[in-house]
Length: 334
Image: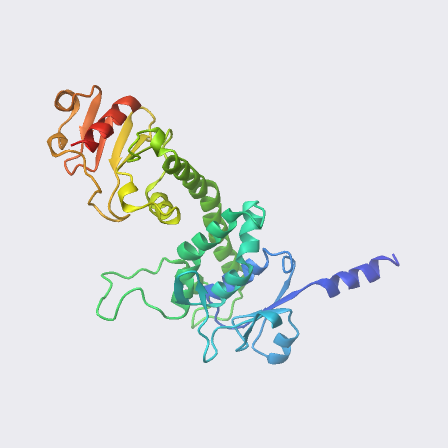
């Protein structure tokens, strides 16, 4: 029993404390607290919600309150005059407390959750992807940055985003105070972890497949204009990013992608668009094939097993991989 007392006291002394403001809470500090609890330093931290400087000074780290941004002091507020911090890496949105914590602790969190070595380049890829797709919008909303210019008005209201759902957990104006901050923090955290899980275990493997296909395309056709995937995976976003990263020049850009359809029974030939959102292709399938199907298409093209070519020429189908490849090789010459 003599050992229990001192050990318990020491454990209490070792517990870190996270500080944030009390009163109405927002998505940014709810997520910031959750993220801190994914780190080695603050994983078992307690939480104090207060605006009292004396209380906050007793905390090991403070987010979204205190009018100080100083990593060396573990103070991460963004409300003070003159604060202009952004994430960098091409992003220009002013940070909220979520972005601040993610900027400084995000790589550690990503590596830990994804089970990757911190030095793995995939950590950087996921860190940037999560900021672009998840964190940046929270920063913008908290800082009052609109997606639209003052001349543009949205055609409908959307209050189903994460920031809005966190907001609904605050007490109503006409009810007694209820403490749901931890529920809000858990809500933001579950969505963060779910998104990171998708990017780690689905998005990143697809990127690896696209990189392999882009790197080996001369083995498919000497022109390098045809990419072959032996299994279906979302490829478009990755292809455009990897072309830039790998410095693929304009005259080396691929025109067609061959892949099995999602059922695995047939094969697709798809023309690469000029940009990810464009309906225009770098080289659409030949005009005389467009809108034609089955035996008639096989007769016109001279390739057995044809299924269709879309009327716009951006995609077609064949019953076999060899057939789809033959269509692509013919299309290059037409």
